[in-house]
Length: 375
Image (cartoon, rainbow, N blue to C red):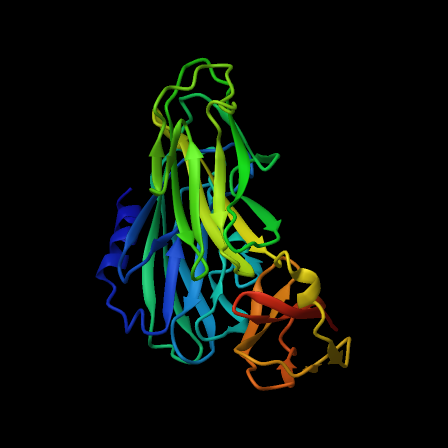
């Protein structure tokens, strides 16, 4: 026990450089500061199932950076840890990104996480200290610690669905809809108590929204904008909370925005805070009702497939036009202003071979789009 606690306290005593000048890191929606220890409370799981803490890395500087990370785990026997960050999943204690993170951009949520495999272990002796920096500024570091507190589930088991999909621990849900100027987009949820005791449900969230957009939810008999909702009435065993009189849904209002926003959710019974279900919803809005007119702008890309560089061309158009390139999963990999331009060259040497989508957008309106293949 002493070895574990000393490992956790070492993060608090570690004096590092100029955090927050060029890198923000969020873990399960919490912005980490130098020396922080974040306790993550979860129910243990049998076998090789992983528990995850979703992570966001945001470049707050003015130039592109290449991220680096090291970790020092203090683990009980039989427990394993790893991470899946910067599109790379490894158990190594040191990892460097294969991609530059552009200024103002971030690696987002669904595919970025820190994990452990408790293999049934129960207790507080899982402690992992992380230090993150960049290749360009190795002395500018951020060190923090995750303290995993694991117990056995005691309350009711709650089955949930979102947009017709069953929700499991650490699930990533992508919801793609056409945007409209004022209409709210919403997806239905259900909650089924499969246990033997009545429970009061709790919901928490952390939001990473595109400028101008907003999100809301209506759960457990309450429709609120707060980031935490506690059920007004207990959910009885064998009952499902989703009726016309008590609707359950998540909302997103894109207000014409084309692109994506990320929301982290955590649901649990108030009587059993260990047995949480965490998942991520990525809202992706793809175009407006005037989509046919927007697609009239002619674009071209050469060479296609591309190996090192790709040159995009398009018809002249007025206004503040932005060129974006996204992966098939919706991750924004490239963005730049092309106002007054009719062509641009993109360096794709660092892209993973595969298909990508590019769009030309003006104040949330998609003017033109196409596919880009990378070998």
